[in-house]
Amino acid sequence: IANGVEKKIIVNKFNPCSSCKGTGAQDSGSFHKCNTCNGSGQVHRVTSTFIGQMRTTSTCPTCSGEGQIIADKCKACHSSGVQRGEETIVVNIPAGVGEGMQLTMSGKGNAAERGGIPGDLLIVIEEEKHPFLQRDGDHLLFDLYVNFIDAALGYTTDVPTLEGKAKIKLDA
Image 1 (cartoon, rainbow, N blue to C red):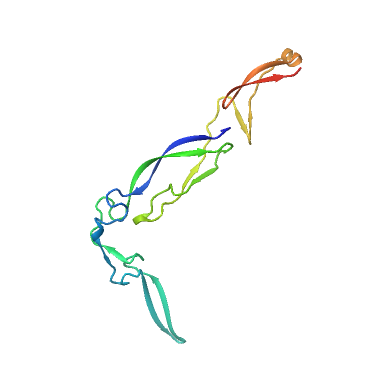
Image 2: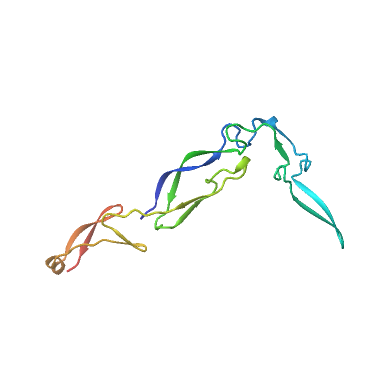
């Protein structure tokens, strides 16, 4: 791609649930405070050792650190907050990208469960073979047959490019 291009692509991904808006609950009244951690999202344990007491803090196993439990789960997404769907995204592909290169679009990846921050979309470039142009690094090659008389006397001809045709002059 010589001057870069704007391309529309359709992405299959997880989007926030349209029914619960990504919360995973049937409605806003479906949440209640976790009894295990008392809403803090962490549990504290005190263990006695031979050198004294040791206190550890870990994520609450009941609410997974959220501090609240969903009583009435969303039936559309089964409380995950995401649903599989499609999205059309416009990608600006810069000039000079090649086979296997990756482009990153921040925040255009899968939606995170229960209203988290969406991930990044990674786009891997695959080149289509051109009928008569070949890539050599950042250069394009075109095989042009020139007969002996034209090479000896010089001549002007059109050669194909990615944007159309270009006129070149071959000196004698």
